[in-house]
Image (cartoon, rainbow, N blue to C red):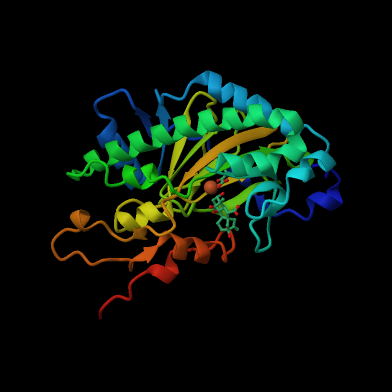
Length: 336
Ligand SMILES: C=C1C[C@]23C[C@@]1(O)CC[C@H]2[C@@]12CC[C@H](O)[C@@](C)(C(=O)O1)[C@H]2[C@@H]3C(=O)O
Ligand SMILES: O=C(O)CCC(=O)C(=O)O
Ligand SMILES: [Fe+2]
């Protein structure tokens, strides 16, 4: 991405007075090796739709190796990276997010859990290194998926659901629709120039909720990620390159009949440092039915959402703008 002048940064969305946003120490922390993990997960999903995970079981070696390949990729000249594009549906993307007009100060790789497909997509840019990358990706994705299953099993236990694998089995399906994304946010000169309380910050990735069940995010030590709280205020998430962050996605909001809320989040570009994040989005098989889980419905509690397949939801979500409320179309009309 070689876009540095004022005129070009003007094409990106900005936010005013962001400097007043506080760095939060209140982000829930879950140690997966501790017995209270299941209850802390449920509490965090109810209150924030977001939590930080330590003792996650993904080796630092596999993280570091993949991250350094990603850094290598993004430092290639644009015409080389472009060979892995466009990101429709998978590949290299720059500035444009999705197909409906959203833009951000970001370049990225969007990949599937089908390694052969990734390899074909990446090899024109990576050349003979693409086999190595395929192995690193495959190792990383299987460890992260294992962690996701562990989290979903703890969640089911914390929710007192008898069938412990009711959520994790959706990911264990060999045709689960998981997506892997690597985002690179180069330092943004406009964000340094406006480094005061009345200034503006350039948006790296605009506010949105993730459509899937959960998303597992890690980044280098550059901040920028913010989450929206129940009172609609935004807090900055302190970066921590040793931990993972978990987002509740729209599909889990539906399955818990609104008890867990999908977290609205966004990324602001940093004036000085680049941010590199890797996110694994856990989606089920396209034919999987998404609906409130019957064993979570109490007495005469009404169902907030109608049943739909993941295919239906994904298709509808991908026709929306980033900041839209995607679940609106799937809410049940209340009886009067
Ligand atoms: C603007 C869009 C980008 C997105 C597809 C969409 O139309 C609305 C959902 C967006 C999102 C957010 C989470 C993930 O980053 C993503 C891959 C996803 O599944 O939904 C993106 C989509 C994308 O970048 O294509
Ligand atoms: O890059 C990040 O830290 C978050 C990006 C994000 O929310 C997404 O890709 O859906
Ligand atoms: Fe997201």
